Length: 398
Image (cartoon, rainbow, N blue to C red; front, side, top):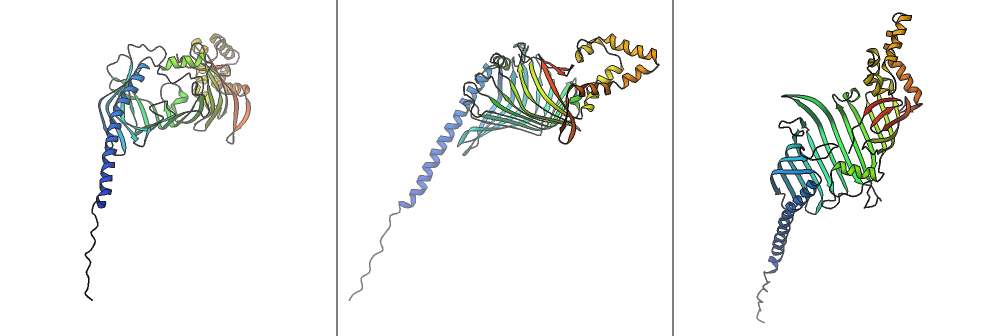
């Protein structure tokens, strides 16, 4: 029998090219999709800028670029300018407050474009109304924010700064004004709140914060954690903040302080309550406070020094309305005439008496294992009262 040799069967080569061709088609399709999405970023950004401009918040950048191919969208804005028009009560619309900073980088994943994360490059220069030279210089080591829900109604937003510092410019000299090791601000639409009248949950955290030249109590470093619920919002339509606050007041909205804790050295204060807005745009309401170490707050308020030096009527009107300065000064004089030096002793120990008076206003309590006093902190048309003592004035919001 003769051997029969069969020729090997040839396999077609085209299946070898199927995968690379499909991969090439997918790459081309993805590239077309990315470049289309990148082109829409500019359109959406311009629409958002136009909306904010109608609210009196004007954003601009000298150079804008888009990168991040293939899986991200990175929008880089250089030489940023932010102008705020009519964002505070009484601010003239012709002279905006302007901030300038070097760069903002906003990043979104191509598969989740509703989440936008941004980073800010320090420093920022703030120009007050009508000034050609900056009034404040703001610095930070790291600044970032995130927003979920864009370009429609934002569902939640956060902003965080590390090593933040604000210096006031006096001529060419930078004078410290405020600083904080860490600042966080979070806000989100409360679960279950109606879409046409949303409630906003907010959290503010400040670590090692201080403010100079405003009030002695704020000059020393403090930590603060405040959680609140804001109600009375009508919508998210673009409008200046005073107009929005006016709508909240008209709707009977309020800020519910769910929980707050402030610590400054050995002094610890917690508070909760409700604050609304008066017809004049000022805070109205009451917080129930518990304070440990209140005896250390009295010197910071300056009441003891005020009594030692004699009491000007204008100062007395601020802290104890209705009491006449000559009555207190005459009392000290009469004590000195009766027993030389007695008036001086009373003045020098005035802070003890004031502390005792404040203790009498509230009730004894315990706070984090320390002795404390619980009492109301009242807000009456912007005036802040610690019992009968007026300790501060808060400017109107509209």
